[in-house]
Length: 481
Image 1 (tube, rainbow, N blue to C red):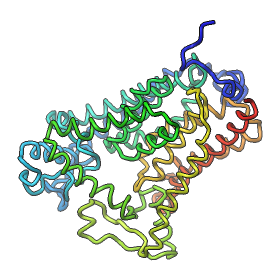
Image 2 (image 1 turned 180 degrees about the vertical axis):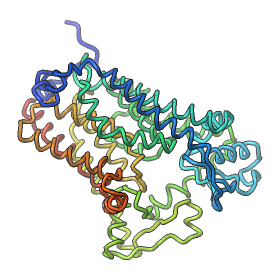
Image 3 (image 1 turned 180 degrees about the horizontal axis):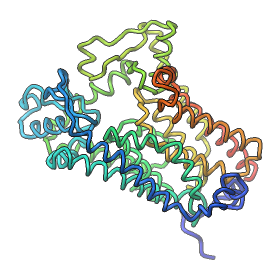
Image 4 (image 1 turned 120 degrees about the vertical axis):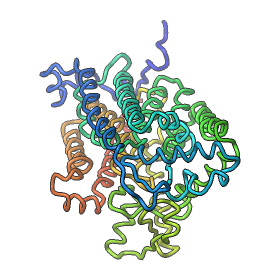
């Protein structure tokens, strides 16, 4: 008998877990789906998403033209949107490329120095050079267009990759996932930041992994890590799962994108110098010295905990000296004032990683197994929680998280009580992640809720629910096996 391809084989344990599409249609969401004939409309929803995203994309194109005087920017001008501010950084990079050394490029031309503070390694900055040559308005159009096309493409691929072979994620599930996550994509488009590209690279890595294209998955993951450091946690996850081929290709990708390609453009010695400056600006203060951004928008776990401890006077904190804060480009960096207090951050991080290790401990050979899908979603949440700074518009990976959660919730036989509890938890998450932070209750109350970490605790609640779901699924799979 002919065996199905590896990406279409279903393990006995997963077959026992997955149920069938009939199980989905017995849920309230499934009945609504069927009544509106919505299973046919996933592509229409994606078209609608593209139209919706075009609006903030257009807003970013208009905003990038606006400028104001600045005493801290190297060129004396602060341009609206992240991409707009980065244009000066790109110009600085071109001057470094033309000079013999970074120092020879002249004062104020280090893209990681005071007045620039570019947040990612040199590869990303180098990729922006063609956009800089187009001019800011055209650059904004291309930037927004690439993001929108990437989002729609990744969602289209994943709708055909989650669940049993040959199935397509019902449009009701897509709609619910977007209800939780679309705001972050909209916000990132308005800011013209890089976070949507993190979603794109991680979505492609997830898709390639499901289809056993480990080499491609590794390259996409390396692009995500270069775009933003936090996806390195996904590399740790795959190493924990002994996916050595993927890890090797990720290492190859990092070698190429971090050292070889930018080194060939600006010079290898200058590239190493700039990478060192980037590390000292962005990574060292948090990872090695324990500093965190204390301002209200920061919704990372350590940032929120530190802010609450400071607000309520539980521990004394020290604020980063002004000269050092200028070198890292942050307004209010702080850390516990005592050596004992500084042990709190690694304790929180180690505890969270230990929970991840426990929740993801089971080996899952079937890559369409919903446990693997939920594990990856859990890693994406942990990335945001463990980061030094997590703004709301950083949460662009939430579509991947809630596609996994809603698919598992509506396709497994949880029982009425447990499913109802999970839906209630999701409703609370929606309030914490979307409704509470959008000024629906007035800016003053919204700021107070953000100060208390409402968005962060929404991420924590989402992670806790996934851990609970995984524990239940592992138990059922063990019984079935």
